[in-house]
Length: 80
Image (cartoon, rainbow, N blue to C red; front, side, top):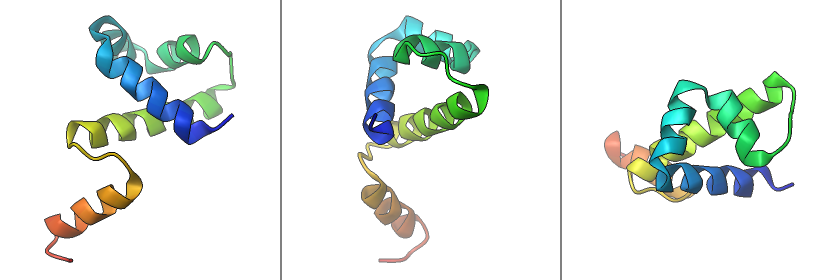
């Protein structure tokens, strides 16, 4: 399973469904388990939840990938 791709898919699913997003905000672990359809140990789910939260934060800024995120961060701090 490509975790990065799965995280991107989950973030897009959450962004396109207000009820699912509300569920994620209330109980992210259960929501992610429902999205992936697999009951994983909490430490693994928590890592995925952190990835989804990071992706959602980047999406809100209009950033699609890590390279763009680093470039954006550099601009924030005056680095080119």
